[in-house]
Image (cartoon, rainbow, N blue to C red; front, side, top):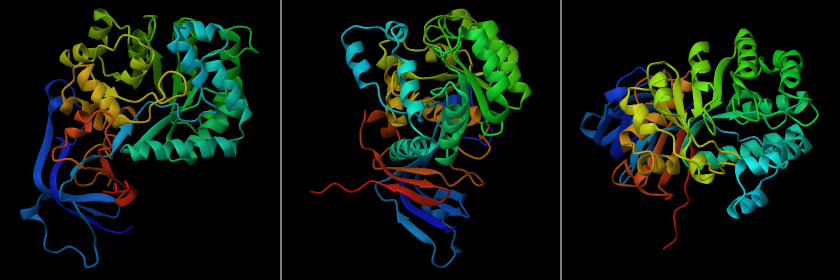
Length: 411
């Protein structure tokens, strides 16, 4: 790996401290260095500081990036995506714009099942190509680490192909076998039997976590418990989709089983907020999905004020959040969830990394952490949230090497 110096940066902004995740008052604790530099050696951050502190003994031939007019933040971490899928749902988007609800579309054979048909029709090579393309989309918006779920196969071969495609694209694979019940099964119990007997042994060798959609019309708390307990026994970390449309016991189950996160929370009430805030389960908030479906926004402010763990993610998927931009999510977090820019940055870096069990290696610009850096073409790092849907990402660096550089506009 080559060594890298980024010099003369307007600002470096990074979550303070060295441990994670951050909650309570620490959620706003972002360390900002003016007129700064970053040195990466062997793919990791070696030092960060003010230009007047730049070491004099840098190796000859070190690659340099001129950071004048740029700000640096840690590489963004998208801890909840469904980036591996076939086809699209643009027709469904049009129907929803005409008044059809998400649940009505699902009951009519649309929704998840329409993507299942398209994903099953694609072979593994095509799924890998698609996921790599989506990974490039995310990278262009500053995402240096992403999680990707299966759940659009709902059979043995396609579920495993999705997990391998996510891994091949450099993502963190999560097995969402219990996404919904495919039409060839007579009910959720029979389908869970199949998943645990026929898919789990191989899925556990590829995935790092398991997820379940605990919701009316998909899997209830008892079925979710059976699935998650078996997955935990196979060595997988636990995640849950919960409280998207109904409060059906997802928070209680997540806390009882020690899940890493419960995601969505659009309908979580005050009792659920209090339970989650008193636990070590992270609430992953998906404001792009809530906006896309015209659903209530999750109670981010209440969770943060109560001392809860929160993270932000895109929920990138073809049906309910066709969004690959974490900066857009940060804008929504500030304008719709009423989080401060500092809280939003922490939630999309070190706290999201915690959900992926990586808060000790990614999510900060500190010595020893991965050299994953986003350079923003802005005078202040807060433009990453302030510039709504703006082309603010200038350069993306992964493991100390340039992975994306935006083409300059012609004048």
